[in-house]
Length: 322
Ligand SMILES: [Zn+2]
Image (cartoon, rainbow, N blue to C red; front, top):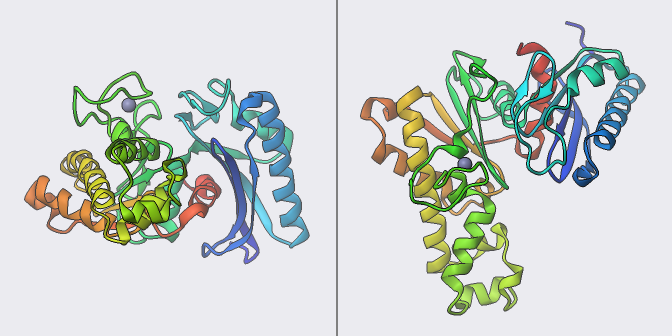
């Protein structure tokens, strides 16, 4: 491999597109982001992604970096041979059915690989992040949704129809709240950022506690995941209750995953995991309480380490993960 070889990746999110260049050791050489303009539809979005691909290739040429392929991540299941989005992406208008890979390949004249965004996060954490050296990895991303990615025997596990790893739609209560997937009581209906905020609002409906009064400047309208965790760090009982509840719900789902796959490590990423306040430790303790003894004996549970960059880094690695 030439020394100047670099990975180029684009991570299409519901709000922003993050993209960058990474060297062979995982060092980010260049990164940027642009708003997704998800409401404009698939065709304008493909123009934007093409433009971003061009700018990555231009940037690489300018820095004398060699790029052998371009990788792209998107929400929803992706038919990874053609790069066609086959799953629903509720945040992006008309995105399902778009053959992202073939279109970009034709326009940019180099190989393009496309996969699900959290699959890419799993690849990145496995290669350069918190899961380096582990063969079996479960990766969970907590944010607007609850996504999952699986590494089995050192390789991405895509399943029979590119839909493996949908951890967010494991049902933990068959009478629970409705989920956007059409089912009810899914993990996502308890652990997505909107679900967590809804529970917090419900508990504060009778009035703000002093800690919340302080972090929210007196108004529940200012509530965010970050502020919830701020209140938890101040020892607020309601905030701690929500955080611990969320950890417990997540662990109920993950205990099942651990029993099924017996992974070496479970990586938890996304905005909720970054809140700190002992969240990941609480999830770990609860999984250990619930899952099979031999399956947790050597299990590690850790926070993802690549943060917001993981999506585009993993996308850049897709050419090696076919
Ligand atoms: Zn669901």
